[in-house]
Image (tube, rainbow, N blue to C red):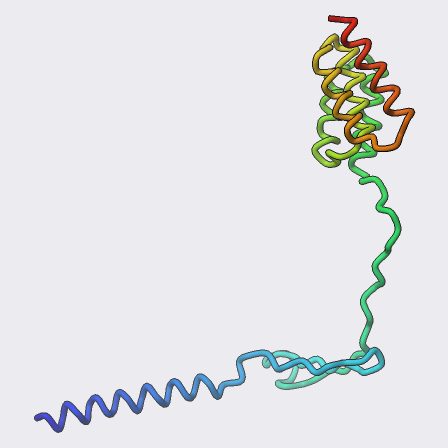
Length: 163
């Protein structure tokens, strides 16, 4: 009886080994990619089942597009929001202008000019404390822009006088 149990375990051990080795020998993983130069054509293997098993197609190598080192342009969404805020402000809709400027700030929070424009809108709304705080924030981001700093100082002065 002991002999039968040992044979059964031996059978399971052999079966397990066969399954394990069979899994290692399969070619299910991707082939290792060869090192290519710019002129070397690339061989693409098509998966089995696509118009002929193991068929390959040769295509020329294309280098990726060069990365631009130019200064990034303002985000188009920010520009559209600034236009919308200007339109709303001209139409007298100060709440709509403020909402558009706040959305622009969520996209570009480091833009001192947006903080300045929102400070101007808050000043026009009579929210003097907010206007002064927004102008101070704009000053902290203005860097070396003396015109923007002077405008922010005027907003702060008007806000203090309006209280």
